[in-house]
Image 1: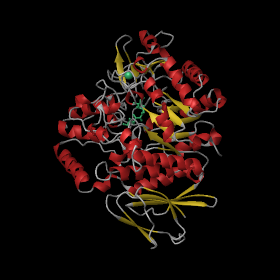
Image 2: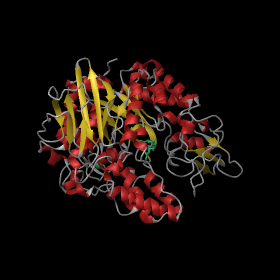
Image 3: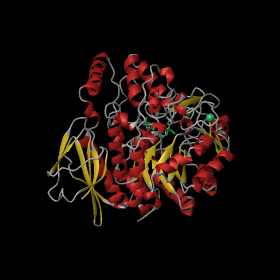
Image 4: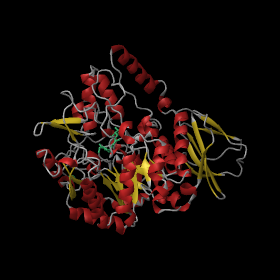
Length: 577
Ligand code: TEU
Ligand code: CA
């Protein structure tokens, strides 16, 4: 069925790093309002705003201390209203972040909950006594420490799947549900157009909070086992309720962030007839290159050799294209079976896509455009993360003290505790730190990339004088203008939205080729994922003479007359066939 949220292109803003209006070193809401024309000119119709609520800022706003107020660093509710008006005036929509697996420990609910076992709010959170003098179970949080924190006031532990300043709410308590649903309505009545729902598939915890059966990594005490709670049936009960009581009353879009879900489980969240969510953010296409730093001297030695080899010798092996194709085609089943998907390669938690899957040096612009071609022609709603549209890259800061992300800092600490040498641990940080994505937006080649005249809260990437908006505005061949073009194509060609999807070369390790087809309109998308030249043989039913180039990341590209296509490194094209 046709829906506006299938047709839209979403732009994610990480407010701390977008634009600093009052020059205190921190991005803010007025800064966003200032840049709305830029976003509109990109062709965006929906903005997803990472949290701007009042927060203790242990996890940059994902630890909310008051759901009804704006973080002081970012401005006031008046500023927010002005921004919302500006968004709507330009015909765009606003999706807010909903973080309700946990609150901040500085939320008044938690202060009350922790004050005494008899507190009326005790059961807003998940408290347990010690087990044999230890933590109540062996769970590890997402941020590398135990998922339990001891609190002396009542001599019990509370559960936190993320940092210890992010206690988990108890969704078995009907009062919690009521509070959260009420809060959602409050924002919807202010006129917002949807929610991006943080870790929405872990709200419900398994009965009895059992130990994970997985073995802890060597040198670690606790086990990270997201599977244990990610697939709880209780999450569907909560979402069905939320849909019925809240969401169904508004014309809004919803996207749930769901780590560890398979396409089968995702379908249960997004199949239209289940009335839960519109789409989820899956991780399969991003998690497969995760690699734990090993334990022990010998293992570390070989790990290092492999990392160096990966960088120098086999650059193009950064992506296992066969695996990626399998993942894409298995996720397409979600759409075929009556659900919908999101498409993203970057967000505020992930390294920069051009550094991770492309080549951020020699083929910077070309590989960034190749990835953009995919993002906008794969089936699902595309999400562009701020800075991606100019090809912003990863950063490698020399010292752990230069990093701000709690996830990064904790993971580094654990690595050092395990005896991993500092220079190895910092390499892991360079590859995977979430701060790669959080460096300030590069607007121009002035001081701090035009983000702020004050020294920013996190270092600006030193490449801002080469990679910035202003420079790309004036360059017809820039990544920015390529994004504008491909986004505008989506408004003219329904095949990009509703067309069937079919990968043609599942066995090819270098080239990705797939068709999108809607009625008589048939497109062929070809992308070379390698930093070497490659060749693609056209399928028998494609007549090269009939084919027309709709978009290419190589200037003035002309199709050959042969029945195969020679591809330059990272070359990508959209053909109408
Ligand atoms: O992320 C949840 C999540 O799955 C991530 O922690 C992810 O596994 C990790 O970042 C990969 O490095 C959401 C938010 O997007 C994230 O920013 C928050 O820190 C987290 O929830 C807690 O709210
Ligand atoms: Ca500011």
